[in-house]
Image (tube, rainbow, N blue to C red; front, side, top):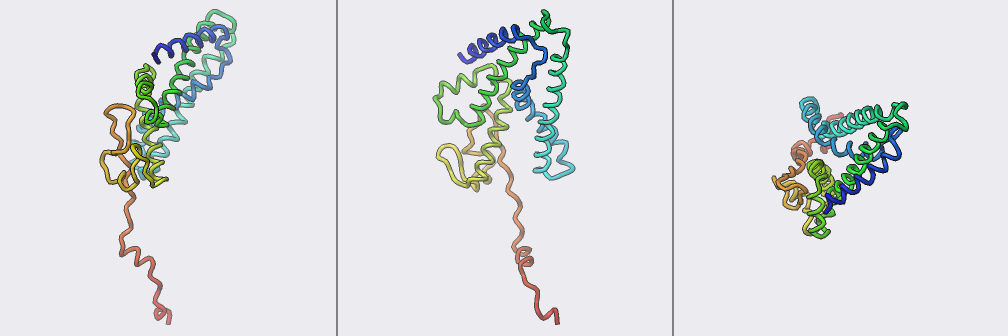
Length: 221
């Protein structure tokens, strides 16, 4: 059903785009959706390249920032080329491209809906039938890995910041870090395994005591 709704939306926006044309169109929704959908794979690739030169946390942050920037730049460049051909305006080529751009807009709108549904863990409280429709939608097949990337990140941040448990959804931070496979995390994609963040190494007790010891007053005599 959701796939049919998606196709209807794409066709509706496609004909709307055909009437409007594509010259001077800015692609705001398309760039947002495609950037969010494509960034995780590039971000993980960049993280792997950066890790030999810096700590894992810093390489993760830089991978995300660079991934977002690179994807957004290329999308802006490529899509901008389509809309900066003034001789296309009010021509058959303009209307044809407008139709496909409208369909792309419909696809991206549904992509944002599916991603929001998955990333926000709405499936844990919504009817099972609705979740099945979201997952069986052909849009989900293009972004399911990205959804789990953001979904597990949101989950991890929540656990770190709260320290409290939420029944049937979250576990405590200590329990999370103690598990190789997180019991409380509900994956969006079947078979996806979320690896919990590693705890920071604790400073040895002897070093703590040395750091807290006050200097001997006799040493100044």
